[in-house]
Amino acid sequence: MTVPFSLGKLPTLSRSTVDRQETLRTNPERLLARWPQAEVLLVNRQGRTPVRQGESVLATRKAISFGDAPPEDAMFLGEWQGVDYWTLPGEPAGEPELVEAPGSWGIVEQVALADGELWVDLRGYGDQLDDTAAGLFTTAQALRNWHHRARFCVRDGSPVHPVQFGWATRCEASGHEEYPRTDPAIICLVHDEAGVNGERVLLARQPVWPKGRYSVLAGFVEAGESLEGCVTREIREEAGIEVDQVRYLGSQPWPFPRSIMLGFAARADSSQPLRPAEGEIEEALWVSRADVRAAFESGGAPTPIGDGGSTLLLPGNSSIARVMLEAWAYAG
Image (cartoon, rainbow, N blue to C red; front, side, top):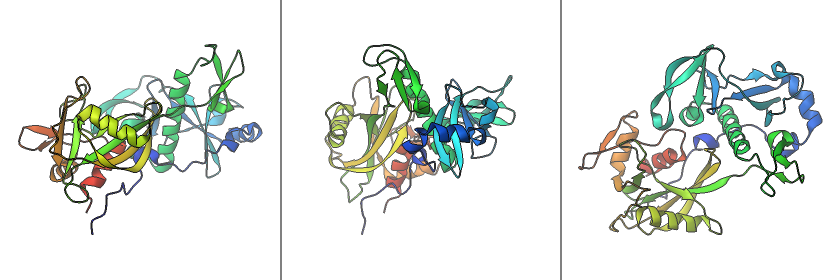
């Protein structure tokens, strides 16, 4: 008997092994004592970090090389197998060479190579990392982006400075503390009403995306809105159709700049006329399971779909959208 599809595996950026409990980062004596044996993950101005060529682990640095104590801008990421991990800003040494490496949506891009290390982007390289590295890089990116956007107090506009080793800021004027913020966003795979899991999936593309690039629909949760209500509203706004049987699938942090993607599935009557949101959705269309499978099996090449001359380029390996589409395409 066919059952409703599920993700089957963790999305790429949901993987982590590191212990990041609050009691670790609120114990300065412990952290300072362990600093000499700690490892540091560097992240540059473009949000890239070094990995050794051909490896799935981060090219971390010895913490002691940055001094006898954590610098003011050091942020604690957690502990794994007896080692503390931190992150600091850093750049490639000297004049790096530019080489090709995986980028967002599986598109090859130019990245810096210095001293045998590739400076890679989380979106393009996240799926190449092991669970520990993926979790560390995702957390470092999220903290970095929050601090970049939270330099002033939300109450009186005065400057803030980091406390709790990067996990909070304190207002210089009033002492008010703020903590990292995450914006919830839904992402929903809508399929038709054929059988349990449907035979076609609703995909759409934004005007700024390259030709052939499609994904499932997504949007931010509004104030005072339930997650299920957000799913219904976003699909109605972006594609002009009504959905039902909304159910939760899983989640993934998406620190670009500070979201968590909450994955859902829903059903819709595919005879409803599609009305893409003007200026936001350039095209929306129903795609068969066979065409989605063909796209997965194409090795990343644009795949012809239907009979209208369209091609399909799937979301990149670091996106929960790809995990959702793969689970649906091979369900049952």
